[in-house]
Image (cartoon, rainbow over all chains, first blue to last red; front, side):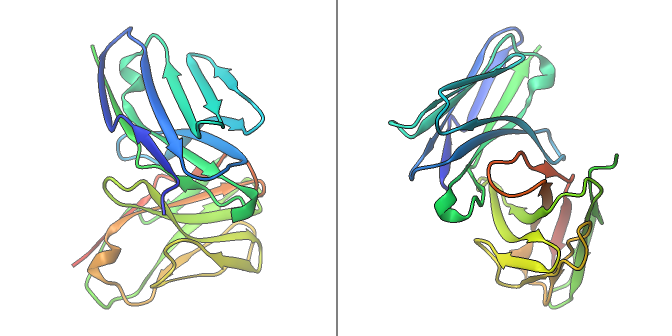
Length: 112
Length: 113
C-alpha cells in the first residue's frame, strides 16, 4: 500500500516561478526521499531527509519535514523548462525493513 | 560507469508466455530491488535482495520470481504472463538498505496481450 501521497497531482507554472509540492504519509518514518522522473526515464534521486532533520537544501531545491504533521514539502525555486517532470516522495521505516514506499507523484509542467 | 542497466527496453508478450527481465549494476551495490509503475499509482515493490543469495518479497510478488546468484545481476522472471502484468518495470540498487538513495534503471515497458 502507498505510504506517501503527493499534493497536488499536477502543477503548471511559468518559467522563473517557484513550484511547491507536498507529501503526506501515514505512519512513522526513518527517512524520506524525493525523486524526479522525466518522461520515459527512470527515477533520479534528489534529496534524502532523515526523521531528525527539519530542512535540507540542494541547489534550487529545498525540502522540509514536519514529523508531527507527517508531511514534507519540496520547493523548486526559479523553475526552468528542464524541471518539467514528475516528482515522487518515498518513505522508509526500520519497522518495515527500510523498504521504500512511493507516492503517486506530482506532475510539474514549466511553461516557457 | 553504466550504473543500472535494464534489458529489454520494450517487450510485447502473449498471455501465458514467460520471460526474464534483466537488471545489472556495476557499482558493487548489495541492495537491489524491482518495482512496477502503473498509471496514477507510483512505484510498488515486487521483490528485493540485500545481497547475493538472499531475496525477499515486496508488496506485489505474485506471478514473479527472482534470484540473486551474483552481486551484479538481479533478473525478474514472469512465470506465466497475464494482462494485469502490463506495466513499466524498474530495477534499482543502493550500497545497502536503510536510508540510501536508490539508483534506477530506465525501465522495461512490458505489454501483455
